[in-house]
Length: 444
Image 1 (cartoon, rainbow, N blue to C red):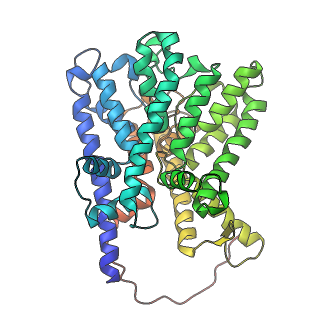
Image 2 (image 1 turned 180 degrees about the horizontal axis):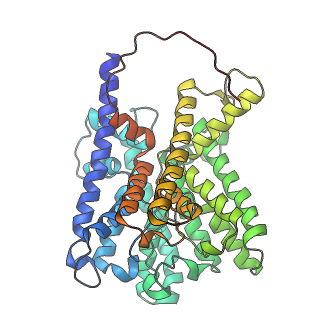
Image 3 (image 1 turned 60 degrees about the vertical axis):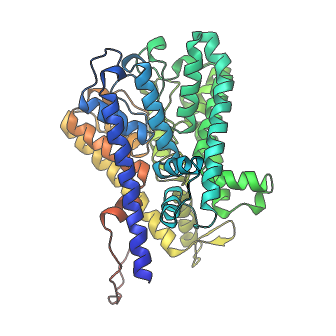
C-alpha cells in the first residue's frame, strides 16, 4: 500500500511539470504571432520561448524589452502567463473548475496539495477558492492604488500600467512596461524617489511571497501569532530579518550618496525585490561588490513555499540554520519555535541548498566559458534565473542560444521546485529493503 501511495505521489510531480511545459509551449506559439509584436512580424522562436519560460516561471529575465517590443496583445498574453505561473498551473486550472461548478477529484486534490506545498489533502478545495479570491482582491487593490500615480505621470496609459505592475509585483515576476516611456530595460528606475509607489509595490511583493498557508493563518487567526503554524512563524520572522538587515546594509553601504528619502526608498526596495520580484529602481552595475554579493544571496533564498515566489525558500534556510544551531549546542534534534524538525526535512533542506548553489555556480562557469564574460556577472544572472528573480546586469539579451537554454532550465527548475523535478525524473517505488553497515567518516 505504501509503495502505491509513493508511486501516485511521484506521478503527480510529473503532471505538475507537464502542466508548466504545456503553458510555456502555448505561450511561445502566441508570442510568435505577428499580432503579439510591435513590428507585426512575429518574434523568433528563441525569443518567444525565452520570454514564455520567464513569464510562466515568474522570473522576469528578458531578451526583449516588454513595453517597446511586444504589442498590447503580446503584453496581455505575457500577463496571463505571469498570472498562471504565479498561482501555479494546477491551482489556476482548479480555480477555473471551481468557477464552472465542477467537482474536484481525489487525484486533482493530490495535485493541488503538492503544487501548494500543503500539509494535507483535507481542506484543499477550500484553500484553492481562498487563494483565488485573495489573489484577485490583492491585485485589484494594488492596481487601484497605483492608478493615480501612473495616470499622473503617463496619462490614460497609466491604467494598463497600474494593472500590469500590480499583477507582476504580486506574482513576483519582475516584468515591467516602462521601457517605451523611460528607456528600454529601465525597469522601475523612474519611480526610485516615489515613496507611495515603492511602498505599494513592496507590499504586493511581500504578500505574494509569504505563501498561501501564511495567508490562511493571517486570515483565520488574525493577530494571535502564537496560534499560527510553525511554518508561518518561520516564514514571517525570517522574511522580516531578510528585509531589515540587507536594508540597513544597502542604506549605509550602497546608497549613502543619495538624499534621505530616495536613499530609504532604494534601500527598502533593493532588500525586498531580490526575493524574488526582479524589479529594480537602481542601476545594479553601480552597486558595490558587497551589495551585489548580498543580492545574489537573497536571490538564491527566494520566498516562501507555496507562494508566487521562487528560490530555495526561506524555510530551507531556517531549517539549515536550526540544524547548525543544534550541532553547535550539541542537541540531538533541530528545533524551531519549540517544535522538533524531522530528519527527512533536514535532509531535503540540505539537498536543496546544495542543488541551488551547485547549479548556480556551474551554470555561471559554463556561461562564462561560452560567452567569455566575467564569472561574477554570469553568477548574478544564473542566481537570478534559478531564484526566478529577473534582476540582471544587462548581459542576458546578448547571450547565445546555449547560454539561454541554461538560463531557461534554471528558471524552470526554480519555479517547479528542485525536489519536484528530481522526483519526476527519478520516479519509482522505494526498493530498499536493507541497510548497509555503518562506518564512520570524519567531517570538519
